[in-house]
Length: 170
Image 1 (cartoon, rainbow, N blue to C red):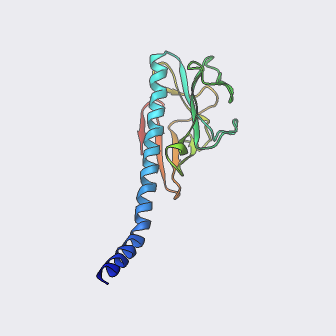
Image 2: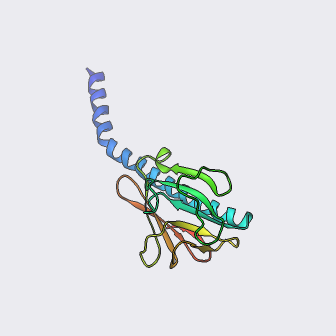
Image 3: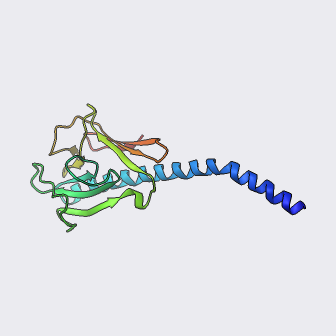
């Protein structure tokens, strides 16, 4: 009888603790995905400097592509005049550095909600030149640019990219 009562109490405690545990997991996913996106943006900046070119973090939620908002890829702008590779170009390590990657593969329920400049205009992604400065060859952008990463519960984390190339997680 004591065992049944103990198991019953354990079950009640487990059920009561479940929402808090799920909230913790969702927070972990959202924060982890935001750190991942920040690391990828910094990787783009590093590629631009070390390879002496214009490189970009292209977002799948851009109206010009048909990818999911949770997808992104790293590309090279070979012309400096919006010479971003076509959406379906394969990853060759040069023009398309990485193919489309979906955040939800590693961070379930997380997506990139938006990439906007300080004038609240949608931006297709983030680009850097060979000096590590932010720029955008496909649109007029006012800095800072904010990348908003959203979790399944609707809470967000924001990554800010300054014109100088500085990046930070807010």
